[in-house]
Image 1 (cartoon, rainbow, N blue to C red):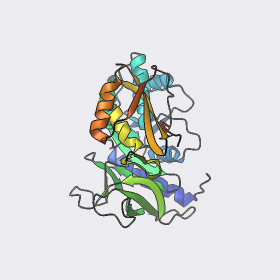
Image 2 (image 1 turned 90 degrees about the vertical axis):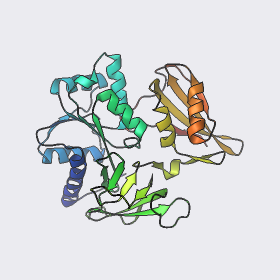
Image 3 (image 1 turned 135 degrees about the vertical axis):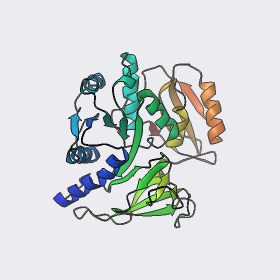
Length: 321
């Protein structure tokens, strides 16, 4: 997908990123490690330029192995890391395998984006405990720009309404959503003339809160991005989102990696979950998923290291329907 921006559009990207950096309390005295391969990923190119505009020393780590990035992080003593939630967990796993204590690497902020997870309590807690650092969520898209930044109380994301018009369509009624109702986020850009979008359906599922009593008056998306409208599964009458399953699986520290597979059983949708479980005990996972989802799910154990690892956006949901 080609998205073309003017010079003023790019400055608009950089200006909007400042909301994210403010939420992360990043200042010109900081150093930031960019733990990903740059490529054409616009989100982190804009992050790179936004950090540089703030006077932050930017440490690129593209084209490096995870172990090399950890060594660079140790040598540079960078207090800020930017990556996806998936890769933050993978780096923690690699550090443990190499007997590197992440809590002694001076990292105090991890800014994540690219996939749901940064606002999910179980995932956030697991990353923060592994790194002894605060996780800062952020959301954006190539077609839209960096529209969301973390709430200071870690309740979710705020939409930057100085740069975007946000609308919400109820998943249940297809009408305008009420406060707290599950809905799809619709965005219109206000400062991007090269590639403007009007009432763009993001596919992101959110719960807007206008009754928020916090310091920020922009709409709060409770829990951040909850999932994708096109990823929703109806399993035996229950609406299931991959991010909901991930939140449950990430609450088990012994689960190293997982994969969800949606498939057909006759005319009905079914879900199978493969997990790398150090305890080799799927029963407790099945019980927890049944308790929290109201659905008994097939869980199978696979060998440790057999499932793919991801540096960028995780692709743990396979739809075979």
